[in-house]
Image 1 (cartoon, rainbow, N blue to C red):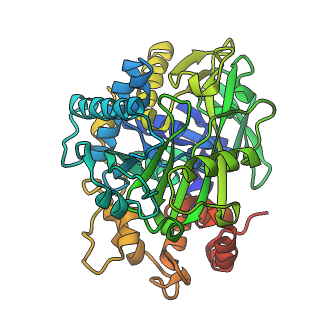
Image 2 (cartoon, rainbow, N blue to C red):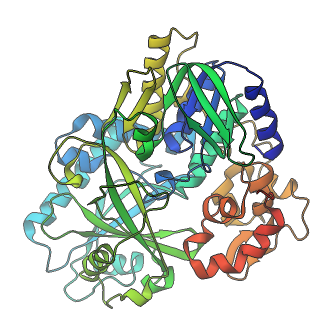
Image 3 (cartoon, helix red, strand yellow):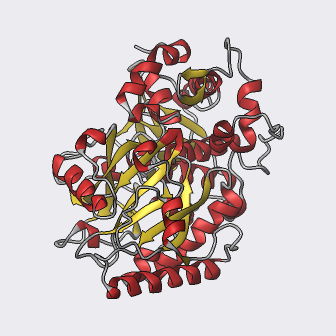
Length: 506
């Protein structure tokens, strides 16, 4: 995917070509729908007003949850589906992007016997979900108890006074949520889908949409047999009949050294809660992300939500209950917030609102998918496509995505080369079996040189973002294809390099 392909495909639509499925929204749900439709043999166009993963899909905890939290609230269906979808991602769709993440719950004096028992039961239930989903222990190890020495090895800054070991379990962790969206979108394009960023949709009906190229200002109408609204928290702007209740989730970003360069996610129970935790998770680029909040976010939907001071204090106060040295606001080097597109069910806390999704047909004929969670994106896409096919009488084969490797997975056709031992591990972790192609395709000077000292992203990755991953602007490169932009000081250091590769746009 690149600017030349975008221009050609946009021109084809402007010339009056009708498509089977037009998807509005370039987050994980929209990309998943485009992939499902394309692999069923439908002609597909996906349009996104900004860039891939511009909204909620880049602001998650980077976790592929197994559904344990939902089991604790009695929602067995979503818990089981989450475990199944996690296993599908880890073993078939994207084993290069999703790895097992150890989660460490320290057994400190402040944790009651009842809380300890509840966590143990929960982790045992999680093991049961893993088995039920058919995910092998070699992919996702069993939970267990570890002694205090091992707990400190995994999370060096954990409070040691009174530490009685820890409970250790495993969940799925994405190298990056935005990279998953990009991989899904590119795989859809690999199967013929037109993936068009910087294209705004308006005046949507069940069979037509007005598209506006944000780069040129040109507008034209497109006809489609099915129009699917997958615009997340903005879904109500496409279909005003929809009622959503956005919930804000905030994360803080730290230098991993602040946490002693942990290898496990320090998992701290939130006082007074049954099944909610704060996580300090080791991430790429030598960082730790601390999250997560769950706050009502009424009012207009901002393009880029902002954390609040109260959320920052809550996260620091909670994690400090389990640390040897207290973290301060000055230790925070970045922060981000995302809005969950929850279905409005009335009163109550957003933390208690169901994460189920719904497929709704509006009076205008637009088919919308609302609610849901990142882990279940593939299942959600299958569900909405099944309904769209039935409602619109589309000619399509059965869903194929359950066993479909994404770009970068070893069995995807793009993975034509095996990475040699000298291939940088950071490159492989982000691109999987496609990593050698990133360097082989580079035409820039010094392709393997880091974009800045201390940042393990190479110049070839910036070029590849533009030549193969649909990036157009500096922001696309720095904030979404890579996540350097989460730390403003790092962002400033790489802007000049990114400008070498970005497409000039007005």
